[in-house]
Image (cartoon, rainbow, N blue to C red):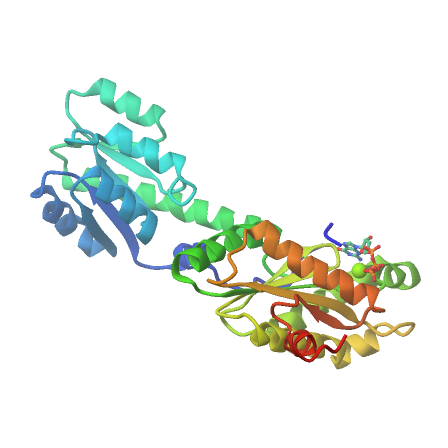
Length: 333
Ligand code: GH3
Ligand code: MG
């Protein structure tokens, strides 16, 4: 199963939130304690929040957890110097996009060059001039805003305005990591439009596009705020659901299915055939740790069974499906 122009942006993820936030956050990593209040005082009036780390390890941890918009990084620190810190930041998927400005001494030309070569966007020479500090920090924050906007654009499906496969791949990884760490269950719905090719063949691609768009809109209406509906590709959609497993994922699957197959607009759009979907669902939990590939595969297997059963129906992985568990207990086939 796995295999135009968009109306709107449907959801707001972490990147968009960052891009739209008015207050931006700066992480200062410097072992010299006195410099922190100094920088904070210079930047507070410009709507910039500062947080502090006093060594490299702490700085890397805070960068990963708190996702600051910019990092000011001292070169000379004991234990782990600034170059080792920037290398770790740039090697990590969660932090490589955060711009780094090095804090260097006045005569450290080699440090400045090495820092820029290692991925820093700029450097500020200590002792710094307040005006220069503000100007360079604001320029770094502008860069971050543009990067966030680019990431957001790259993760939106142009036809439906839903998030796309790239966003889904990133989020399922993060949600399953949280599942493994904190035992937070994650559910997945995967559905595919039935005989969609016939709609294209009989009514043309523009009508097919309108059907896909409408399904995206209805899908969004059928989801809770915490759900992540995405266009997986072609005529396939997915919904990633946090805190949802077992009978809850079955209920959610039936809800999404009902919204779509009973939507009045969809039913009047295509005269020659009803617009229906086949849906599969599965979940991961602390008792059932799964990789992203495994969870997608289980939902896809369930979707395959829905298609095999004649389409226009829902099927769930048997670990989630109440009815199949009841059948197993009572020996009903
Ligand atoms: P099944 O019930 O087995 O899913 O049959 P199907 O016809 O839906 O399956 P198939 O995967 O063969 O057809 C999907 C079609 O969707 C093929 C492709 O041309 C079409 N398609 C993919 N993306 C778009 C799109 O953005 N717009 C339109 N109009 N068609 C698309
Ligand atoms: Mg299809």
